[in-house]
Length: 221
Length: 122
Image 1: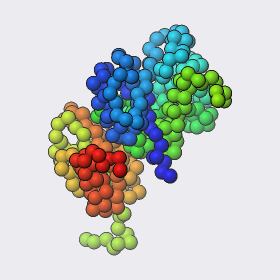
Image 2: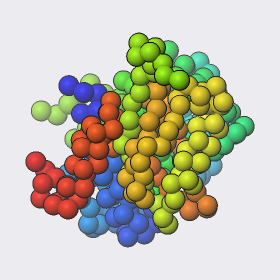
Image 3: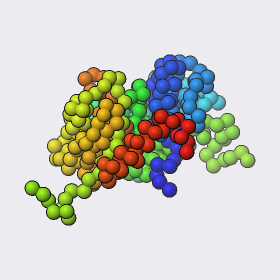
Image 4: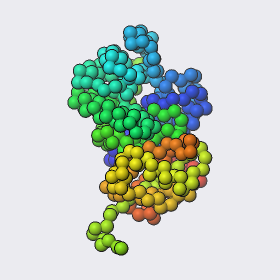
């Protein structure tokens, strides 16, 4: 069985209206994805006409103050929204990984061993934005690659969940899973790790959003 | 001058499709692929990848690269995102050891599937 037989998901895409969501969904399906997450959708995504065997998820980027993270999580409890915080500086990243119930800390600044361990304990996944490798050039890309390499090293050591996303703003930004694997190899990620970060990890996050999910290790039969 | 077969570089042919807002010429596409490779892997890296554009018809194309550097070649192609300010994306359809294989297995097959959507599921 090939590594690429898995079902792939890109949890962070930016679309504003139903028409662009539809275009994005068709392009993603053509590229080999089984589902995408729409960041802060403006309308109800369940009514959008999408290809067969394809899923749309709603992701919420929490842009509030770090002190309001818990309130925001409480507000979204029982809903199927994937909760994301965009990493900025060490203080914000630290508060984010300490917040239980948060799903993804996207592209944090350089994390350390303490933060990686807390993130693993609280099941907060560390997001790697492959779009920044695609869109940036020169110094900024070199800086991003250095941060990703360090974060990957810590995530590996402490078993922190990893998510890969192309952070696409238009159908032209979507890259197939094979290409994401090739790009992630630049900062030292193995193909197997990259495939898990695009298939098993998103599925794991979505499993937690099911209404019958209670807690890790507890299942309703 | 010819190199003896045992010392010859082993090559791979990448079949790709281009999705762009406006039609891109062969020269513009290849220049941008080389720029992207230079920017990502530097001079030494791009010489190892050894890109050569074999065919390109405005939508589908075949590019040659070194066998040991197919992953780097795919990464370079994925990093091409703008030409003349227009959005563009290059999607790798498959990798083959011969031009014939790349054409028959990936490009012709895609054209057939696009022409007859019912065949896609088979």
